[in-house]
Length: 342
Image (cartoon, rainbow, N blue to C red; front, side):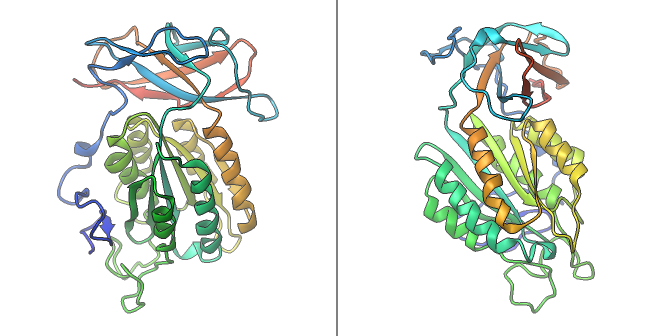
């Protein structure tokens, strides 16, 4: 069935019933600062090996997942804890937890642009995205699939079943509205029929972050396949980025550049950079597979640092994070986090 403006449209009765209604409730109510908690996980100084974590009450821990690369962009694994320094708003922090192995469960969202400009790219998107999920998702991981065009559709809710995820990808169809087109959801999304070229990109990122990933813990990432052009979203780009940051989501963007329609590199670069991901430009469908391979390698080569901020105020402010290496390598990490408010 189809919900009101700017909701995830549920097409499968087995899918999650609770969805966001932006037209009825202010968007700010759905913002979730999920990565900080009054009772949070703290580990010992472990070097490169994981040890049994301990719990302490009334302590906030900021966890940052990141990649390290040389000047040529090649991943650098297995650096020791002593090679890193972390700063919050320019002030050095004490590293309490560190690992160079990303063996924590991963929650991954695949967001597919199914607007008219993706006509040439969509078939390859679905095939390669399915292969990517098969390579990345294990029994301990979860993934979901969303498409966005004139509406935002949850095609498959969280699952570790790759067969269900592939079936969700297969449900993605080009949707430009038009009433009697026969496409599920056509003409019933939040964009009026008089303006059928809507692409709710920012709304898709917002909903995936707040309504799905924001409710999960651990490693969280989002891969958005799009040309980067938004038309008709209720939320702005800044709101989408902030919600992804508050949900502690790393955003990767596969910028699909079809010469017939063009693309918007700038806004998608901001989304990726601010959340610790990156943007990969794909100008031909046959290059999508290589881009997914790069993302897969990065997800498998992440470091993790945890620290207790010296500033323990729960004021909701944005705190800048900077990670430095003694070797002067490039660190790919989110630019900051939002302090809790309670």
